[in-house]
Image (cartoon, rainbow, N blue to C red; front, top):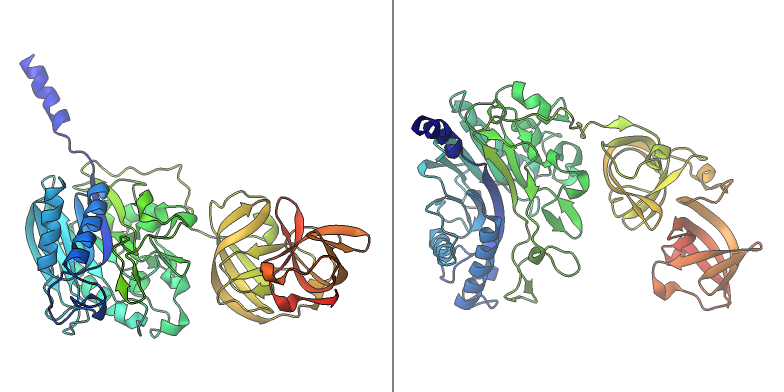
Length: 515
């Protein structure tokens, strides 16, 4: 029996997977004047005081406790003083971390930091610039289940306030230089708010592209090869310096941890080198990446429940404008999933193909898509005059009516019967197109066509024209005419809401001929 128990002992000692996470807490400042604060956080101004700080501490501690990460990178911590307060608050509520680290950049308004349940062996700071406004990168080595693991905690320059790409490239080059100096078998994780989308090689805004299309994430940290995202199944044999972006683990419509004016983005990252997939030491747990989405982190209307600052005053409500992201790691070997589809490689298909699908399993490239109607951030595109059109819902920013594009469709949706594209990337602009042919009357009434130059009478939410009646919907209810009005419709989207209907987006799209 004694020998049998000794045989079982290793089974009991097998470590369970541990969680690594990163969280931008949105300006955790103390209530003591330092002289380097953001103007909104100067004590005694804008309602920022000891009480407000205590509320903010409680809210951030709540998220950290519920997130329950074993290693947690943090961004936007003012200094060590408020970091220690947070550490004590976590201990008070039963979520203690015994190990921690923080940067000490002189004159910097905010620092990056890390909590750990594993012992910290050593730490250092990587200086990107002597400027106090350029944050240091925190490097921490921990012993996770007895294995040395280096974690790099980052907070790169934002895209606002002259945040051109070259400024993020400086961070990436500093980090990559340090990685190149590490032993070849060194295991490490890159995490933090990198202020870049995972597909920045496709989505970099021309306004901040001062590097001729070279990107910090894709080209310096090598999350792309030959302008394509590195896939998970490539990682076990990937060369040194290549990194896998774990955002690819999620379906396209779930790839976001931040929203700004309704635009979803993937600013927060966990990047992994090849030796996190090699079956030795610590490995990534396949399909474990996620975004922490507790109900209280959202408002009733579905927006991220960020810290509330309104009319120049802090309101003692909310958490952060970022959501935490996390991934699991284990001393058990990485397991490939051969049945898992590589969902990030695009296929070239016509618009008609999208109508055969309920959801996308891979991106679809639409070649020569003509914008036949653009209203606000919505649009209708068609590839041929007699082919199908499709509605771009809330994702037509940057497109122009009458222009032709190659588009990458990343997400589709069916709302009340209306087929919609909800996420696109503009690959290439291919000049103008003559729209006349695209406006000819369709041979049959079908959704996502553009109807032009029809007259009729409006009555009871219907347009009566040529002996037929069809539901008509005015996107702005203030445009709705009175019953009995005779209308001329210049442009209408043949949409669908449980049944076909005409949709009028703008006052310029119709006129009242007679009341």
